[in-house]
Length: 154
Image (tube, rainbow, N blue to C red; front, side, top):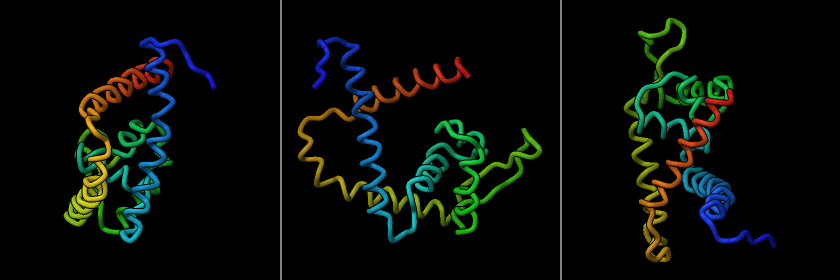
């Protein structure tokens, strides 16, 4: 087993190596938790973006992942068909509509949050004194560094 020498760089590599496991487990847990709602990971992710960040275009949503607009569009179309998302004209662009949550979409997002918090609330005691605020700050910093890298190398 590879064990790098302790250093800030080793801590960053450990974080990078651990993050995908967390992502996949979060995805699996969310799909299990939300199966009866018919909300799969891609839809949950798009709903979350619209819930927290407000109305956006499909390219805006795609850039956050980073994936193509074409990868996000079927998810948006499905959410529209189910009545959770609607569109409105975009004053900044003639063809790229703005997507926003409907009242039903907002209710769904509130239910998703309620279920996710209920599912982890009892398990959080096992986390001991884990500093989730610091972890959030670290992952946000890494996300910004990676976004800058992708923007610079595009």
